[in-house]
Image 1 (cartoon, rainbow, N blue to C red):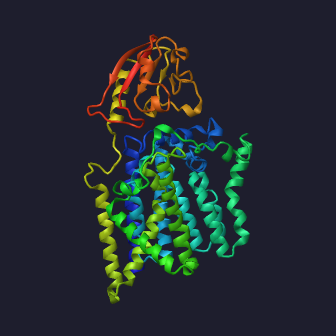
Image 2 (cartoon, one colour):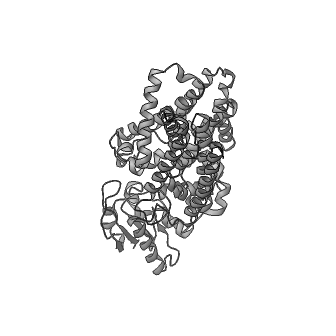
Length: 485
């Protein structure tokens, strides 16, 4: 059996086994990876059939909404399965791209992608990072096989999967110029034109993307952090094996580019350096800077890096293969590279699951357990008992009661109070407020004291975790249920 067939067979096994595993994770996970962020994406996707304007929601990401909408008929698990499919396709096309760029064994790429600690849990989410990564790696693949027009059209939609995609457009414009594909430059506006027309049809205007852009704000309670945040926390993002590989291959690639600058614009080097490595680098360092400065509502979340894990995996696999090929190993070089790749792959997988009690990595934490405890209490007390409303700020309550606030349907659950300084004005006697120590004060704008010292409210019960912990905004987390007198 040739090495090409061996690689093809292993790639099939890796993708098939991963498909089974990731579908299991999606179906049997008891919580969303990233909690409310993921749940809100699901609510947006599900709502477009009753509220079509949500199809252009910036937070939900229009491309993700469009492609995953049919899956939402099967509920939140359906959208998670959509993400699993996108993850697997990223692994498949990532392997093909790496082979096109010189890697001898493509099966390494889906392992690096799918089993990166920050990427694997996307299977239990409705988040948009996997789609962003797929668009990036698929466009690079199309460019590598000289399907320039399709690569240009596909990449033009990337800003509708995540706004960071803006940085890809000038890079692809440069690549098209180097390849003398000047006539294709207008196709970089394909996505903009298509979604501009959709905006007109939905009465939001042709330039809705820029009018509604929500990321220019500075949110004080998000805080700031070290510039090297994602590098310091690499073990929970890429894991030690992958991190070592990235550091080695990236530094090698930088030095090679410096000393062979003219060659970097030739053939496969153009794709590897400027369509794979450069966008991934700008993406990570750009987010690092935003988090350091506290701009654009950046929270410094590790999962942000998940958006470029497919690109990072490709240049790491290609760089590793190039390094092995430079070692004078004679006719056994491919055999040694094959075994080295398998060993690192096994190390990668074992490292991701080390110390974990389940293949479902994102398990309910103390916050989730406390919310579940409060839900059980509400059920035991028979709420809602009549016509009272319940004001909640955590999406767990909405999921439990099957209420999607994006549908704008009448429900006993409310998700906001507009008169925050005088909440009693908007509520009737018997209405409840489920105050939680994170979302209610930070996003709802209602402090604990504004209810606890308010003569119009009575405290029913407080839930505290066994081990106290501090949440975003600096306070300890607990849940208190108040009733309007």
